[in-house]
Length: 108
Image (tube, rainbow, N blue to C red; front, side, top):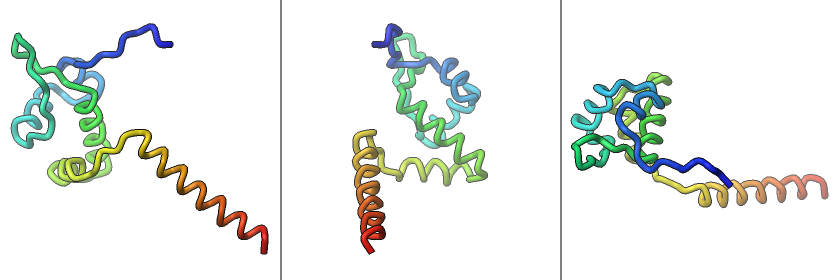
């Protein structure tokens, strides 16, 4: 059991430190591309969720691979969001198929 409490929201400075993306870039992406939509607190400060962090991290990966910003954002927007249980089910199915192929090969 974890003793630390998991955060639900992150400030723009925390997101900047975690993702190595400057705050002004995060604000630009928010306004220009509507890519991330942080909630605004009572004081007007941006509050980012974990989903926002994941999007920013994916975007960084695409940009480091040389993809243009607009294309990377479209790629992320158009990719279906799967939860871990769905991914595990797909992996399990693929492993069963591989096992069947290997079983068939050893019979022959």
